[in-house]
Length: 325
Image 1 (cartoon, rainbow, N blue to C red):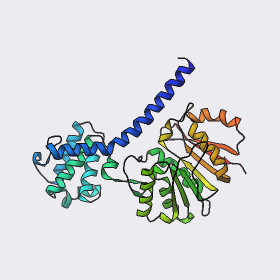
Image 2: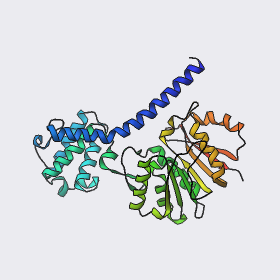
Image 3: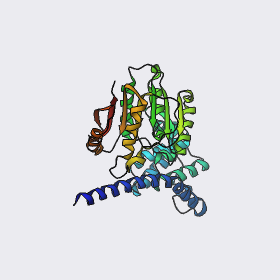
Image 4: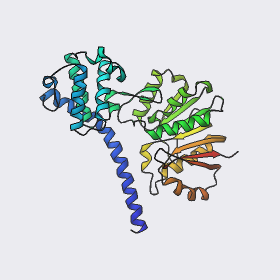
């Protein structure tokens, strides 16, 4: 395969992945609504309350565990438990208590279980079905099309907390706030009095981040800014300099011709936004640590690539830069 063909193929694959992720998330809400409408209108799309042998919690969970397995839904047993616990308003672990396991569901509860289980059969992510999810000791609201935190998100957060550990009242700038990093950083470092500014071009992500901040009582320590960052511009920010800049955004999977357009833009902005000796953390594609150094050598930057951190699959995932003093 020639270099030009390989380059074109790689770009096509990256674009395909990006579009699939975004379109899938944007479809989720409509998919669940469509499935629910068919249930309500026809009563034939999914198993309804009339087909149950019992309305006892334990037996309904078993019924849907089998149903989800037949439909080849991943981790169907956990989904059935999470949804049942959500409908009952209890923790998943409490489903094992005899007082709950042997409870009979009301007709309204049975209908709600049917609706939510059918959404899961339609492959709607469980986090969107429940409308919330636990992430790094926080219970956060979740809604499409805002992305769901991934294992890589947690790795990036842990690195950020480690960087901030020795600082006093640090200022953090998060680019791409849809994965809730700022909220976790603030709550994980109460003694540091961290203040965060989170920027995102998605109104959905901005609104959801603000809503979560209010729910957690963190509104005074988090400023959310709606705006787009590219190589030429960035939205007005409340501070001129920061101790840490953090970046993670799946929409950057297609980063221009060389896959680095957004990464380069962040590096250029970060050298002006960071205080001397402070850090830029960026989640990147595993190929970026090999492609970026050649570009960096041609730039007169005040940033030094300190380290490349690997993810849980031992792939190069997070690039750590330090601004020179």
